[in-house]
Image (cartoon, helix red, strand yellow):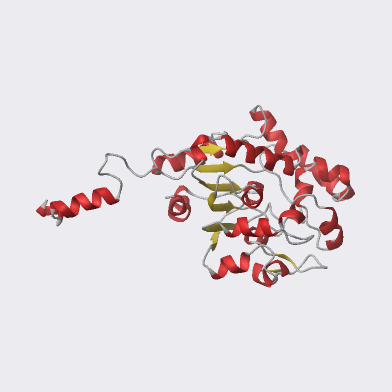
Amino acid sequence: MAALGLAVPALLWLGLGLGLGSGRAMAAVPLVIWHGMGDSCCNPLSMGYVRDLVQRRIPGIYVLSLRIGSSLVQDVENSFFMNVNDQVREVCSQLAKDPHLKGGYNAMGFSQGGQFLRAVAQRCPSPPMFTLISIGGQHQGVYGFPRCPGESSQICDWIRKMLDLGAYTQAVQEHLVQAQYWHDPLKEEDYRKKSIFLADINQERGINETYKKNLMALKKFVMVKFLNDTMVDPPISEWFGFYKSGQAKDTIPLKETLLYKEDRLGLQQMDKAGKLVFLGVEGDHLHFTEEWFYTHILPFLQ
């Protein structure tokens, strides 16, 4: 014991403090993951890979990678065509029924999964979400669809056509996921009135105090922006910024938006309390290294 510089009583106290005195280590906080557009819960090259990264460094952690639908094919299809509000309701049901999550969990969303998990935090406070990590999520929406993931080019060509024809028509809103977070800075009034998802969770039609209270209950809200992003337009949406209203050239950061100044979601209060974390990573959309993930993301899960 002398070699460790600890007397026996001190070592016993340390063991008890860590939950080791009874032979049990402190349980890791469970993690819930939501994938992005055109992906699935369990792709070994994406969400399966991320799950393995986490479990490699946090042994015994329970990781739930969300699947929307009864198969992996449905999961991919639903990322394009299932009403986001229905997806959020389905996820809230999954989380409420999962006994591993009853004490709370951390959440990590990739691309559109980031804003979808924020909706879960705002709408479904039980079980509680502790930390939300948004990796490339578009929290002020998108106004452009420059590039597609994976092998989905034909689907994305069709999506572009639908968005051009009428992103805010009822049929497109209800059946095209990407239209539900389409934010046209040249048609702000149409966006506020007709967006069935993003305008609601961003408090564009009025203040839902429950949304605000639930989001402010987070311990941390981490937003990751890809500094060379060619998929998200504008990339600053990943840090909750967007285009100045009425044009689509100049962007403004979160602190200059009315959403922040009027504190409609509590983001200003969260910022002042040190709950907002803005991380930038070199690379294109969702491109990061294991070293970066372990250095910058893993500490929020431990």
